Image (tube, rainbow, N blue to C red; front, side):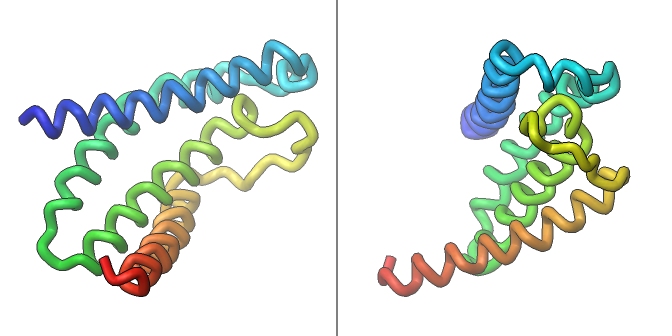
Length: 133
């Protein structure tokens, strides 16, 4: 149970870091304020629970006995989380020079992120195996 709480806390810490960086950018770049919407701010707050849940899920997945499956699934969860978060909160989290809004659809973004995250997990697995760990 303690590992699950730690994983949830790490997920919340990752979320808090992204929010802190975004607020820092907002403080020094007024152009971002022009596009911030209540929906993007609301999604940012809602993702706090999703980040905590993803932390717990990744902790559970890290216990899988098959190493390749662990890397692929944790990468997929992390990729889906980050890509969908950045899509849902684009107006709040994108850099100031970004003018083209991503196509709506958090589910499509999650699927894209999961695919990219699984590829990243596979590449990390290759590096770990090449090192002989």
